Length: 335
Image (cartoon, rainbow, N blue to C red; front, side, top):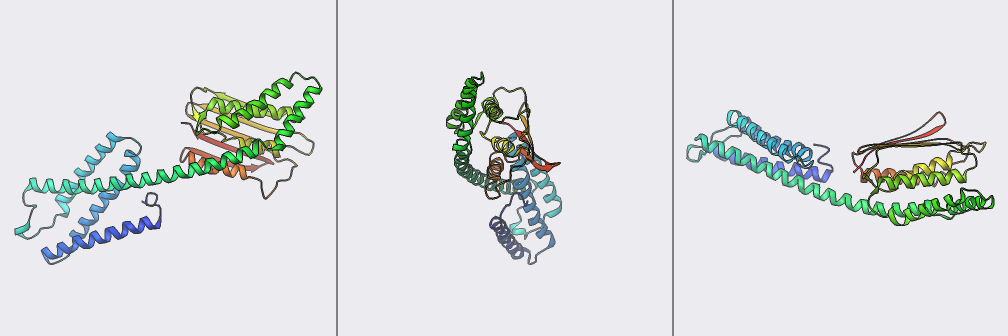
């Protein structure tokens, strides 16, 4: 129940409501039979159990998961259990003039109807709370998306990045290298992707992976000692979609800090796709470049927050430093 009733205000409302219901029912019980029995208290408690079985289990794990038939069958089973328990254990008698439970048909109808109402009320409340929660998450996603776009543009299209890239391309043209045209195309593709495609909520996975490959190729050209840069992208990539720019902060960080005191850059990136499952691994040596404690890690923290908002319960992220290496392991369920 703790995971469903998420805040103190909501929990207080539940406690207050059930306290009022208990008081009202026990008042009428006392008015009828002139005493408050243990059976009467247990009967009300069992009603609360029926409510929360539906509220905390059936609705979130079946109905909200679009398992409607299984949900309806579970409700029927719950009603049958409620009838059997109440009719055999928790029935308490009123005065003869007002006893509505003497006839078995009436007892069955009353018990089923009353518990159906309890279940319907619980379902409506849970669906309304989920609607409110979805609306809140949607708002947070929009806010986070705007922040991410600004942060990504700042990280990717800043003068330092463009200067290094253009300087590398210029060096290639001076040397009349055959890589110069490809470098120009890669840089233009990076800028085009950032400005046009990355603004969408979702992009094709193949486009995101192509963006990553272009970025790494450009880094290879920029970095002189790049023989330890390894990339492996594998799997069946068809029409899967993904939120844009989830990996680039980790890759940027790897290239920024993955250079040792001899100037060797050691970065290993592995991306595996299997149906709707993606695993991203990024490993770099902890190089000689000192981290800016004030600004370091902002992009990665931003990505972590985006993952929590965009892929709740659909991602598993592990970040560790071990044996002078910085390792990121991200498993993601694609949409």
